[in-house]
Each structure stands twice: as structure tokens, then as C-alpha cells.
Amino acid sequence: MRYRKTHLLETVLLLLMGGISALEGVRLIIRKDPQTAHDVLGPGGYIILVGLGLIGVGMSHFLVNGRKEGNKKETVVNKEMRKQLLGIILTLFLYIFFIDILGYLCASILFFCMILWVLGFRSLRFNLILSFSISIPLYIIFVRWLNMALPGGLLFS
Image 1 (cartoon, one colour):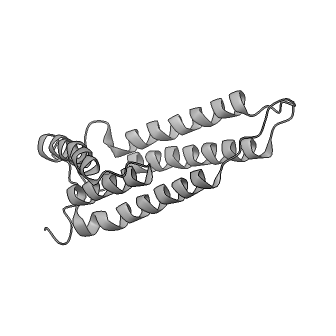
Image 2: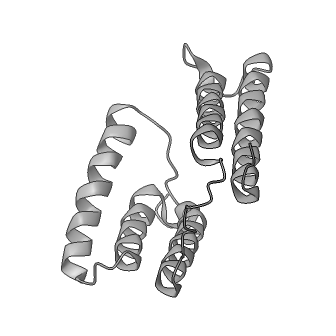
């Protein structure tokens, strides 16, 4: 059996990320910081589950998509799709940057507006309505009900 190089590389990256995540989860379970909040499962348990999930996805990706087939066409990614992908990556980096400055709620509203714009929704009214209707319930659920400590932001602290 021959495998495509790109699929082998994708599989190796997924397995590597999964392994690193699982090891980091084990490290968090072994080394407990007394200044962090602990729950029954602990933060390491969740990270181990994510790591094992990535390993499972990597293995299934290898088994399902990796084989070379002579009659299979290569996927062509056009210029518009590349621009959209770069826009999504840029938006994620901006979200990571602004979440500490603006706080979770404001940064999330801005993030959803920008991501919807990148995905082709050009109506500002629609983007704002959808962004608010996603961000505010998530804020209420995680910050108010579940008492999670999400970034408050430098401007609004």
C-alpha cells in the first residue's frame, strides 16, 4: 500500500498534537498547583480526553483517506477559498489578541461579526444580531451560571 505524502504529514501532525496534549494532561494531573481551582476530574483529565480524541482522529484519517488511488482527482483550492482561509486565521489571531484587552464578551461579539463577514455574510445588521445572540448566551452560561473565570479585559476591569 502506498500513501500520499500530504496525508502522512497530516496524520503525523494529528498524532503528535494528540500525544503532546495527552502528556500535558498527565503532567497537570501529577503536578498539582495549589493556587489553581480543582474539580473532580481536574484540568488534566479534559486535556487527556482532547489528546486521545486527536489521536483517534489521526488514526482514522490515516486509515480512511491515506491510500493512494489512481483514479482519484486532486482537490483544487481556488483563490477565493485561500483568501477566506487566511481571513479566518487572521480573525482568530485578532480574537486571541483582543480577548485580554476587551474581555471575553466584547471580543467574542467582535470575533463573530468578523468571522461572519469573512464567510460572506455582508449584512451588518444580521452579523450584529447573530453575534449578540451567540455571545451573550455563552457568557451567561459559562460566566454567570458555571462561574468560569473568563478574561474581563483591561478596559472593562
